[in-house]
Image (cartoon, rainbow, N blue to C red; front, side, top):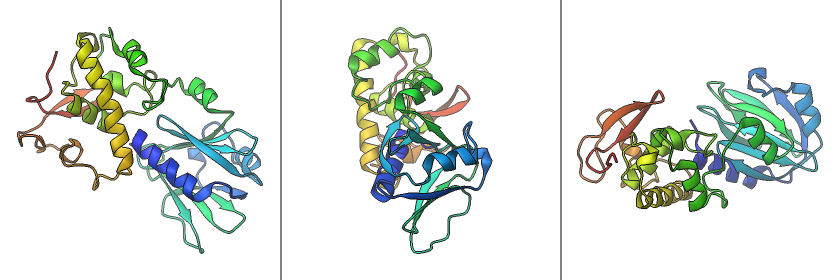
Length: 264
């Protein structure tokens, strides 16, 4: 599932292709993608308008429309954007197609139909509607705020990092990476982390997400020192080559190195 670095990569792609272009119409090719709106309402909200800028809220991309709220995109398991020029055919599994007056089109592609397209007044309203915590890279999520969210909780630290109501944007893959880089076992109870461990975890969260964004969330560009490319049943620790362990946490498979990630 696309997580914060993926969504930020989509956001930058969106801004580089679609800002300032006048929308002619919106074709909804699969109504199942719509989040509590009708195709007609989506069309009326976007036709003859322009996208002015965009913002990321965890795993959501908000495309702000000229003087009239925001289009919201959640990419589900397999979603992505494709900007089409010169009569290019939309990719297979295109679910919503935005036609611009210059003839170009923006396709929202979603194979498994877990993504959603909606409308909202602004980012604050989206956070309220979806009960989202602060974006993991938001400036207001500093060490003090992170400490207040995490410290003292009885839950396992991986589950807390993945809880979108506490911190928005981190899922299964990058919670594993953050914990690996911080040297924290995923089953550690949050309340058992001391101040030094909390600080290290906070720094690792910011650094991992920022570095993956710089790599455009492309696994081929991510350093070999990261756990990411080694997350498999037969995976080996990138530090010493020893076999990785696995655990089920909230129904998700966590990969970790028992030699380098310690349970407090």
